Structures are given as C-alpha cells and as structure tokens.
Length: 224
Length: 223
Image 1 (tube, rainbow over the protein chains, first blue to last red):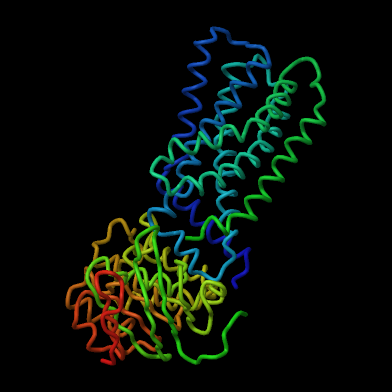
Image 2 (tube, rainbow over the protein chains, first blue to last red):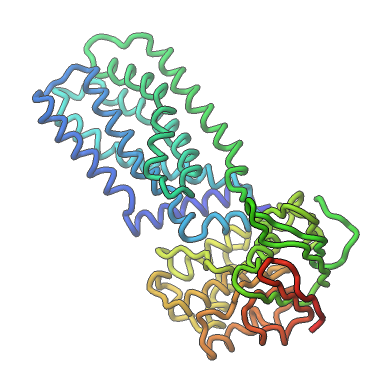
C-alpha cells in the first residue's frame, strides 16, 4: 500500500493543476456570487440591510456558488476514468474523499476571498465583524466541503446530477446554515451575538460528523 | 493477506458468472492460466469479454463462481491485487487537460514509484512508443493513436504481473503496433489476457477462450 499522505498529495495536486489550467469552477463561482450580490443590492434597494438579512445574503450566495463546484468535483474522474485509476492503485480509496474535500475547501476559500470584499462593499457600512465572519465561513467551508464531496460522489454517475446534487445537498445543509447565519449575523450586528458558543459547537460538530461519515463510507461508494 | 495458497497459477476461474439485473453477461467460465502465459478472449460484441476482464481486474464483482487472480480470491481479497495489474480498457484513463508526462507521473505516484525512477521510466516508455517529443503536450491535443500509445505506457508503467488488455491495438497503425509490441506483445514478461475481435491475436496466445453471444464459453483451447 502507498502511504495515504503521498496519494492525497498526488490527487490534490492533480486536481488543482487541472483547475488552474482549465478554470472550470472558480471563475464561474466568483462571477455567480458577484452577480447575485448586484441583484440583491438593487432588489433590496438599500446599501445597509440589517445584519440578519446581510448574513442570509452572504451565506445563501456562497452555498449556491458552491454547488457549481460540487457538480463538477468528480467530472474528470467520471469522464476520464479517474475512478478506475484510483480503484486499480494500491492506495486507500478514502484518500480520494480527503483530496476532493481539500480541493473543494480551497475553491470555497478562494471564492470567499473574492466574494467577501464585494459583499462588504455592497452591504456593509464598515468593516466591523468581517474577521469573525471569515472565521465562521472557514468553519462553514469544512462542513460544506464534506457534505458536498459526499453528495457529489453519489450523484456523479447520474445523468440528472445537476438536479440531484442541490436536491440532496441543500436540505442536509440546513443545520449548517442556521448555525452559520446566527454567528455571521451576530458578528455583523452592533449587539453581541446570542449564544455564539453553542452555534460554534453546532458548526464544529456538524463538520466533524460529516468528515468522519465521508471518510468512512467513501470506499463503499466506489464499488461497482 | 487473503490468498488461497492452493495455486501457483496466475488465474483460476470456476463457473464464473456475472449478471446485470435480469441479463446474464457471463456464465460458466472455467479456466486455469499459468503465470507468464497468454489468454486470448474472442467473441462477438456483447459476449461478455470486457465483463470478464473487469472481473479479473477487480473492477467488477462476480455474481457467481470463484475467481482467483495472482493468488487473491476475488472479491474478498481484491485489495491484494491492486498495483499488480496493468489495465488497458476502452477508456485510456488519462486526464485530457494534463500532458502525457503529467498523466504518467500521476499514475506512477499512485502506484508508489519513486520520483526519480518514475522519471526515467516515463522517459524511456515515451521514447519506446515514439512520443518522447510530445511528452509535454496535453492529451486533448493527441490523436486517438497517440492517446492509445500513452495509455499503453500508463498500463505498463509500474511493471505489473498481469496485463489485462482490451482491444490493445485499436487506433494503432502498423508502425505504432510494432512500437508497442515489446511492451504488451508476446515478449512482455507479464501474464496477459488479451480481448479481441480479431482471430489473429489468438496466434500468439497459449490458450484461447471463445465466448458465444450469450456469454457462455463456446470453446476453450490451447492455441
């Protein structure tokens, strides 16, 4: 057996190289997020919505933009035989889950590096709470990457995967959205957040559970 | 390691069967192939040739019978087979947006080849198949024949004990066939299973298995 670390690095490096070369996911995600912010800006007709609304705009936009990447996450594996390559190699197959999780996490972080400043320019009158918001987004990314990788691997062999992914994924993300929006709303508000410790614990627990589930069941998802 | 310990053969199949729902793709296949030998599998489209090959590679579970490949009983000990098989199927298993060298380096890393040794091996393989000047070109810019030659390099890169070859000469002209022959032809050191439509591929085989259109062996004979 090859060490899982070597295999992880090989798969992640391959995915990032292909993304940098083809720009298949990141530009679409960023463009989508910016477009949604522009639409909300004009639809709400205010430059300073209250913190609950602002948190909702940011999180829902990130979730929908993430689906663009999640739909494409296993595209090269499905269309170019990557699944078989992994199944034939003397490696722990769960490494593929870990590498895809890491790739999706990186895509989300890059998306947010572009989207958060645009969001702040459109909807915030100061930079207050932005650092805390970025922290919450990073925790959101872990849960989103774990569930997204899991759902994408299930949906990728279906011809209806573009529909299947959001239909399965979005309901699974409700606990994540509730916890993250409470924390982001609290961070952006002038008043302190209500029970931030509880919501942080919910986020942490959600992330841990889905990372563990994904790693544990992924081997079986690759079987014929 | 889950090995039977009762065989020194490369492949032992007993009443092997594979169903896809109601449809039986392969039935009652029994044979023994010694290490270093070549088995040619012939038959019309849909006879189950590729299904047999996928079972031997542990990419597909048999639904009946037993299969022991390189001492590993499938599917129980399929993990023990990984890294010992060189697979050349209908899909080249190459990423179109990576170059030929990058694809081979990726396959080498997955199979645990040391970076320096892999570099040398990749260079020599590309040279052998006449692609040394195209190693830095993306697969999407290759012709079908060049893709097939790169896929052959990928299949033999880790010097597998067993080569499973599905129509290995498709897309290759006479010159390219000559180039790849030392890698996957009768001179290759590995045990080989070669699936083909062409009866001529049986001439270099030690055994020939002909499947009828229902997936049943019509004939198993020494060549």
